[in-house]
Length: 475
Image (tube, rainbow, N blue to C red; front, top):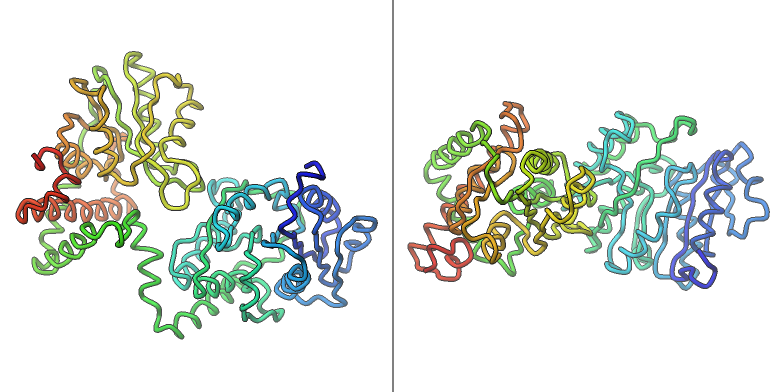
């Protein structure tokens, strides 16, 4: 990065303990991003300090090993004396690429009151299995205590707003070394400062030194810290709902702008309770009957309609890939077909679902002129409503492609908008795995919610709701 283009509003803090093999390279690459690089040597017994000779960094030295928490806090204290807006942290073992710092900075400027985390969990095949599952366990507990979903709570590659540390009270004892960064997320959330993920590659070199992180010990310490936080807040049940159930049941609803949706959500729950769960069971049986359908003959359709799905670190997840793979297979067999991918930006994504899907299909060899996208919708209902509004689909044979557990609700909503379509499951067959059963059950709740809302709107002649959920019934 040219000298005159360097960002001046942030500092980089690098904690280091016995990093002689990598620290010089990391520090030099960090200096290419900004002039304010602070390395904190935590009592290294190797040549870490000597490797930093003649580099234009600020070097802080600990006479004894105090742990990562103390090293980070020492670096934060030093950085807070500078006229900056953000602090970037990254490890000294080359697990994080300083060249990815602009990704965090761009997101930090877009969301200046958030912690930005370089998240590495997009592709679990790139991560050692023990590390991956340890992180997933930590994510669950920390997300519960913080009150929102987390992608990678254990990444040390972060951007912090400088104001966060002016009122933060966290232990920096050696026992708190790998608890410290997790506790920051929880304490920050209590101040109204949330985190946002930015996808970065997972870098795990076979020649890297052994990690200082000890899975069983450190995850246990993190769990104890979280347990203490939860007990102190009465187990914080709303945090559990917001971090687990809400992303599944209410992924895109904002009570301030979607009061009808929330009211129908509550009414749906009331009816489930009033019928002792029978209404939900019927919805589940209906969803399951569609999930078990045979594959559709896809040879004579003009339009393939692929419903979007929330991305993971700006990339299609496994279910979305199944939908796209099915579309790619049909397109290669039927040269006259074209595909519409539906879906805008959802959750914390930096790109739309449809754009990510388009890039995926192009990589699969599908011609770009056969791919059309819609980037305004946030959920299945909006997907289909926006698709209906397109002027060039009338009298076209439409094949709707989605996952088996999602078929029943999607087809019912499409019918409500007057879209004449047949369904093609993304999977070859329905497998009775625990995940599929859970996903089908969740879809049955969404289906129940939709049906209750539709009939309530008819019963009360709520034109606003009718126009939103069904073009035919609003006439």
